[in-house]
Image (cartoon, rainbow, N blue to C red; front, side, top):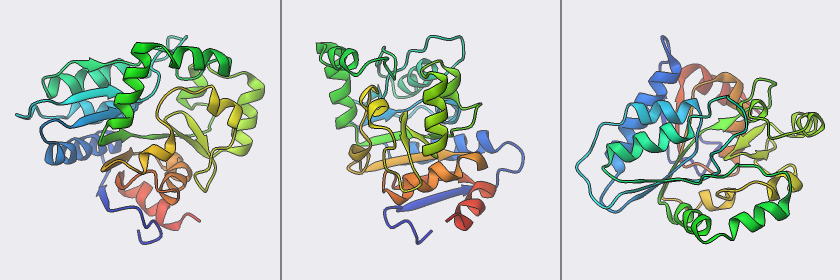
Length: 242
């Protein structure tokens, strides 16, 4: 994938039977290979990252920290797998999970700023900044997208995002070049800022859905991920995407 200079490694799985699970297994194996003592693992959430968590084999390492890199609470009954994911990762590496127990997107930027200045929340956000391993997926802007089902947006905001964005990374919506599309919503979002992903030693994007290809492309063009774990069908679509 030469058109993505920041991409150091692409792991492509056949994805013939269960692409989501196969990507989860491959992502877990890669993390098991690279993790070492005193690493900080920062996590997004969603079904794909949870599949990675489910397939992590416990490893004899010490001093590991596992932290949520974006807000994890939602006001609907729709599952975002945030707590299951961080708990499972933490259990595999014999550590305590570090939660970011707030909504990922607030109604008002001022409210978000007040929350972000809380001592505990600042500590968790700082830990996310310090993480040398980031594991995340991208979202789409389809009606069925998880963020839309979690109740964070008005109908008007949803339509704006569907018109301007190709998807989201850590709940920050991007265009096809990986640029933030709506600064108002971005300033209401709590968690890692996308520019910080470029500084991670391991910035691992996991994806197993052709519908995510536009957002994957945007993430790679902008250099937010240096490792990609993807199914064959989505990889083929990504190569043809322009």
